[in-house]
Amino acid sequence: MQDSESVNTAEYNYLTALMVDRGEQHPSVVEALRSGGFRIVEAAGFSHALDCVRNVGPRLVIVAEAILPIYGADFLAALRRLTIAPIVVVGAGGRHSLVRALEGGADAYVDPSVTPVVFLARVRAMLRRYARTHASNDGAS
Image 1 (cartoon, helix red, strand yellow):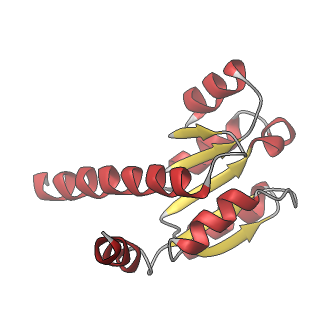
Image 2: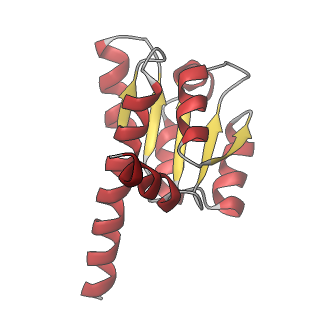
């Protein structure tokens, strides 16, 4: 079991995650990403986040729910237009916030208290699905 975990972690070492927030700390999310071999790039706002998506090409985008009211519903839609990477919103806003984030373009909504192991497992599952979907779309053209 230990060996397969090492192989899985090594598989994701090349990944970059973009964290979009205004300085909020999500220690379990950061811990999970770092333990999974992710390089974390931080963006403090709308324009910076869009520039990072264009220039860095992250494989995963993490958005703190607290910034969504500041930049509006179009923020997730703008990210979605620029990237096929999974977008995860981290927040504790309840069912209404969860639905709004998912309908706005997020792929997942997680509570900030999520354990690192569970968060990393969810991220890996999303990345596997995205890789398969992207590969099958490439083969169809």
